[in-house]
Image 1 (cartoon, rainbow, N blue to C red):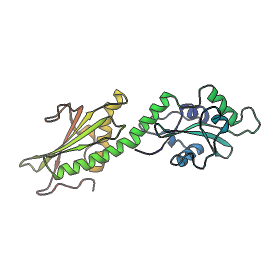
Image 2: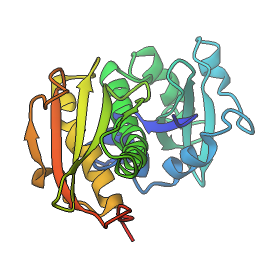
Image 3: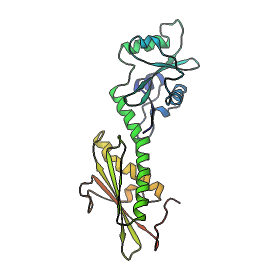
Length: 253
């Protein structure tokens, strides 16, 4: 899992930066092109090292730190429970003005609008799922398929990371006298963030893995609920590949 995940609160993104909320499956909030968001990403791995505390917020119990670019001022906060580094606000420095950035930070905090909401936390978790956990699980599936193809009729289990609500079992079954092998990838659901994500995960993971292996996309695999020795699987994907007389092909080359 990535040590520190940069993210931006919805309020900051919508009101301060003026950008719409992206779909977490296709874009991270921290991918928005904005100078303070770029600074957030740069600082995230080591925050708060090198950052000055915002004393007015710390006196109110929020250990936030300043980030700046030209006349822009922002505040970051590291949620140590989830290892997410948040950009909470991005406003203009107007020294001595009642709407100076630091004055506004305190007003937002007093109104309960500065720290991340539950929806923000869910969005950050989904971003990590789609942009970190899924690709890394797919890499494990790639290794499992190659191992299974090198050892026909064996089963290879893949251990998923904490945020991915599935475990995966891969099997390669040699089809006798046909020069073919049947690849079976079975997904077993454990816990989940929500039902929609649980349904989408197998396709996402398999699409990543198939692209690496040079295999068809998930939509072109045969899909069933349970398969032979995997009756408890939430979803099972099957495809057929050709192989040589003695060795299986190296995919993706």
